Image (spheres, rainbow, N blue to C red):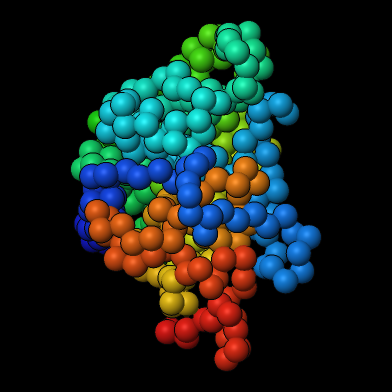
Length: 366
């Protein structure tokens, strides 16, 4: 049974990874600060009753008050962590944030870590300024990271399947469950996973020393989101993960309490994404809709995509900074595995509905 689930997870993660590999040949900006076409500019503050109610996560802010960032900023940084070199990363950063954001760390190891500093517009920026620093952890995008995913979560998945037959996870102490999970980890996997966490913590500590007045935030997508959330909880720093697996069965392994998760961590995931259902979430969870431009359910791979997540957040909430999401959300990008626009113009700011005369209509395909 363990081997079957192990192989099944390798296949599933490989499938999703292929999609990301195809999507990463040419990373395009999530949003741009300039553009002649205004059809990609939209903001919904909740006051217009003709528009859909914004997702609660859209009203949240992180970082210093003068340089606060919002959920779309974090989604963009989680996406840009997939950049294969720092020149590509810098290009994307400038297109989305202008001169207000600068790269302060870039390491394409495993996992890849990037960090950016978001500051107010000043003539000369110094390390003593109070800015917001975002550390982004890249998600699954190569075979080694697939094995890391599987090494962590295959045993958890098996226990969840067994729990459907004979309830176990809700009755056995979590310390016992953590011991079981830890016992099934191969020594090489355990060492690599522990090194990942140590590397994240050390990098953040170094950045805290270099920029002592900055407010720090962790973010990441998929496996990167999981590590970002665990590191944030362990260090007492806010962390936002996108499509990240749950944390409950990993807390004891990394010496993290449920309180630290609840106080510091939030996960955003689509309703059609199966990855966040691996392990149990004990953090704040923002679920969002995952339908394509025609109103049909999107595929699991699309629902797991960070671009799809960001475009759904923009479709409902818009961007308070009025940046342009035309290229990422409203146009078809032939370089990606998505062969249609992620958002229909008819659905911007509108609620999906089954009514025949609805502007944004649901297609019942399940």
